[in-house]
Length: 80
Image (cartoon, rainbow, N blue to C red):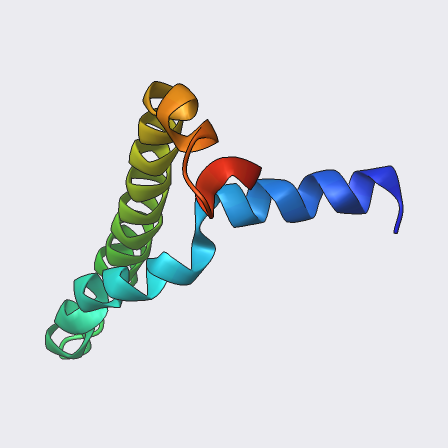
């Protein structure tokens, strides 16, 4: 595995992308936007989904930075 691949995998793991599935609820408004079809509203919902995902990841990162010393003592979190 190359160094770049390792770094990208580490970032993806740290951003906790698997938790982004919870933000799919933001997309629940899409059926109401299809009639009448207004592309700018759909784009707005997609942008909101991305913003929610990035906000969630930033909170995870911020928490990890604050808890780095405590996590070093934890039996499973010490590898972060």
